[in-house]
Image (cartoon, rainbow, N blue to C red; front, top):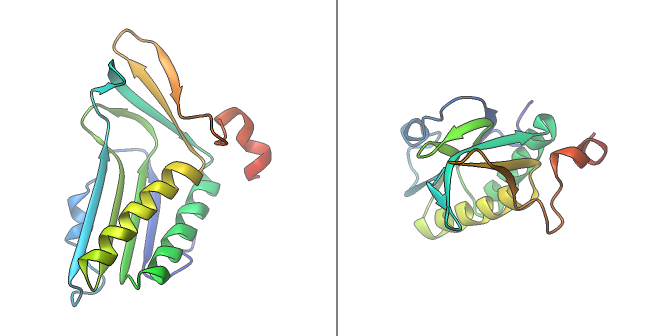
Length: 158
């Protein structure tokens, strides 16, 4: 899918994310700040030992939404680059689930953009997270509160 903005790069991937590669691959080397956020699978959630997370998505809609968010952030904070990469499938503890990297003239804009982007990625992009505990139990995390579940997404995002 073509990005909405030429300095936006977004993707849903099914393997490990090399987060550092996004910092070392700048579009504009005259920027004063690059902020990299790496969201990883943590070992416990609410006192429950986590074995892995599994992400499902309506991929076309997810990429479309990620492109829209990247474009909005580029314009709102005058960013020179915005990268959003979200992993799908099984993500073991300690591995990256999501990477957001932005370049801006100043750190305040870069930090604000990354925080804003992560809140919107978690809240509005049709990607769902299932937690697998160490005892094999599986449960969907945050499917409530107006967010869609994988089962009801097809009619909304088609």
